Length: 387
Image 1 (spheres, rainbow, N blue to C red):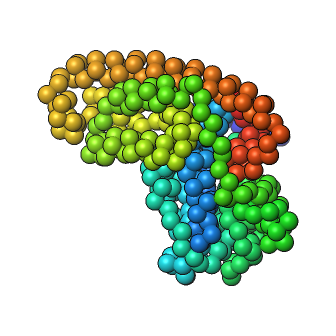
Image 2: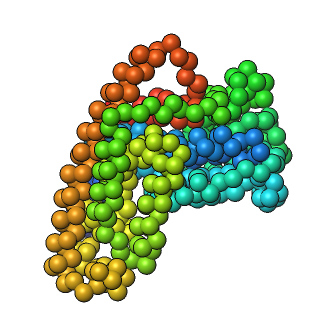
């Protein structure tokens, strides 16, 4: 048997103690670490070839319904996931042929007014529609979240054969599986034609769904007693925004511009945007609005605002006066958003009753109805509940 001297024994004991303490501390640090934030990331891939004018119109109209549904999602800890949306076009002959006529309009963003502006800027122009290429490009270029609890999803909509192009759809699907992204295909036309043109295959490989829509259908614009009031409250809501920064003036003007664009499509489209704006977790503009900045980062954030980049009417105000103004606007906004939320519920109930009266009418499936249905079903896979 081999014996150690007392100093050696003491040294070994000390080393063992350090190892145990280090391991225990690492355990406590790891257990107290905050879980990674959960997101909903959606990439919308739109065919912009000649026959797709109706699809683009539906995409403009469905945006606000989609983000409103996403904004109702709650995780197990009652946290609302952050929402990020990317937009691609494919099938435009003027886009780079080497890139498969695919173009990224915007990567993952939470700035919904910019996204709306991009949708309203889309036009159609005939070309080749390479579905496998646009899915692969979105998988490769976008910053998909690593959190396995995040709901990551692609919606690709169009017509013509799904197998066009040199890049086979299976390569795209392999990438989707690696990154945990669900691929949903939406064929613009009747279902059997969509199957003949292989649109069901993309959904199968991405663990998603295959749907078909009538891209030329329009959701009925049913007038309600609440419409005028909602538009009135939207004007009051816009008056609670306090722009700052070099891009603040443009963003503030763009907010009103997107209101006008959406309401020009239909009263219903405009109101769906107003409804989304009443949820500050969905419609948040902290990058240019001081009220949202205050809610996001607290009082201290207002001290960092460069007064030289404020509107002329605010440049001469003291920090205390600015904070008082922003807090007043914040309170006003909260009250207005509650009114919009209550009116929206009453409007939804009214519309539900009207639809019961017209239950025999067959409503065509649209991009809006199918995307909402898919989101509600798939979010449950990530332990998200949507009321």
